[in-house]
Image (cartoon, rainbow, N blue to C red; front, side, top):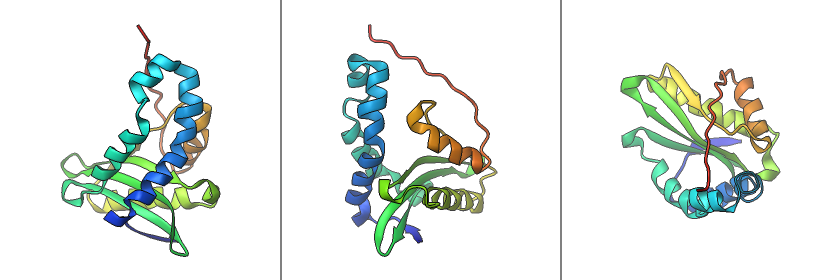
Length: 160
């Protein structure tokens, strides 16, 4: 596996990977939990939202970075993080691994890459968030295995 900085030409692959990774959450888990009104209002355009977000993620001049993991020239995962040097704080925004490449240490390697880069940039603390639902259980296990301390934050939404 080779980890490298993302390039603009990677964007379509990253979007495909993001949709493949998070599509089951939005379409199966989240929608079923919150119902159609909340789903449509909050994340009804989740694919387009990710497309817009991904286009802005890699901006090293602003402390935002994306690295991709490749195996035999194929992108199998990526991590996006931001560093606020004056606060000495890094945040891992997105971490995605293709379905066929999961459980091979790629997510761990990408997270460790982002943590090391944030530390090298002056971060004393790195944060990452995830959901408390069953879909996100593998992510929680990974983050806890990496030494992150969970702090539960509950968000409520209601259709009115």
